[in-house]
Image (cartoon, rainbow, N blue to C red; front, side, top):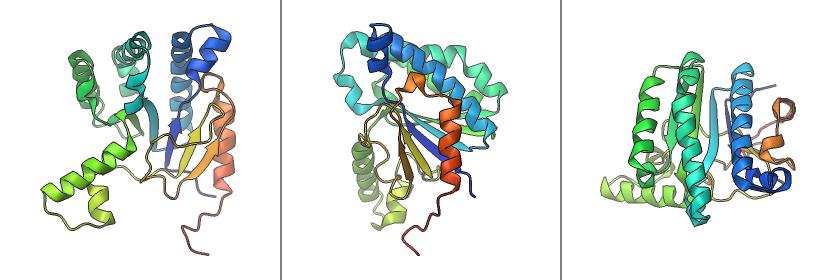
Length: 225
């Protein structure tokens, strides 16, 4: 009965939850942040070493400008208000994706948060920001070509955003949507996948623990018998 070392989550359903319960997509995103805090705490409790959260995709720029601004403000709030809590709880913050498109203030706060938490070892919290898996793979190919590396699986993995992070053992997607949405396509090749009907703000520690317990009972063969 092995526990997952790395859990990845597509936090889907915030906007739909907000419309249904608060008549506001933005309030759904705000409620989703509370779930993030609960799942981080539960991950530590369950000895998860890596937790990757799909926070902002390359496709999210297509959303209304006011919603994008709210999401960026929410990220800025998280970095300013929660960084001390991350530090004191032994959490190391990592970022995957191209953050150069974000406002300079957020880029500065991201770098500061990474530096402050760099020595922590209890949990690696990985935020996927302006992340798209196809873009990541194309960038890896460009790096291989630029550095005149031999093309194989190992060289691709060394050039991905996740080069220092083990592949996820487990992927959870909330929101009653059964697709990967351009998230960690290379890294999820042998991950166990759980699709959850609940919207992200309704997802709780009991739901999470139930999935972790189910994972422990899965015999993972990786193509073998």
